[in-house]
Length: 177
Image (cartoon, rainbow, N blue to C red):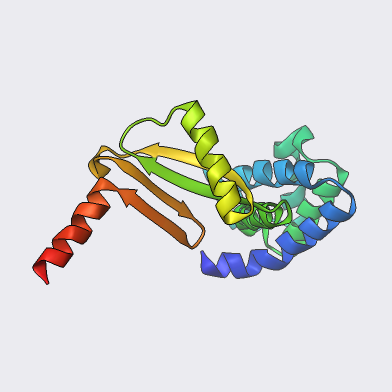
């Protein structure tokens, strides 16, 4: 995947710069996510692996995507096809998403708890994290009963382990030393 990321980075950056310039970041994000999902399809992967002309490849890909791609999106697909880079489209979409989040000063935060977090608690938690991280927060909540209680929060490189399991493990380490 790292090779695809290296290949995808300049394409994602170029698409993002164009999207910002044309004030269409959200629509480009939608187009690239859709095209990235199409590129993951087993039939499309098999088609891309075949020896077809770039024009034929881009035509088929654009027809599969249909109305999900505007004229600029179609041109982007053509450029990728000409350079034999359509297989990198999922990585392009992922990198574009990261650039969009940075641009919008937003960060995804993974929150794991022992039980389901209520909507009110999620709102309160998001507000607290926005103050602490000075960024807009997008919460991804998960449940893991093995943490016993508390929360495990991961935002980029920042990890906050406020779980009962984590505290018990720390206590065990201290007692053993």
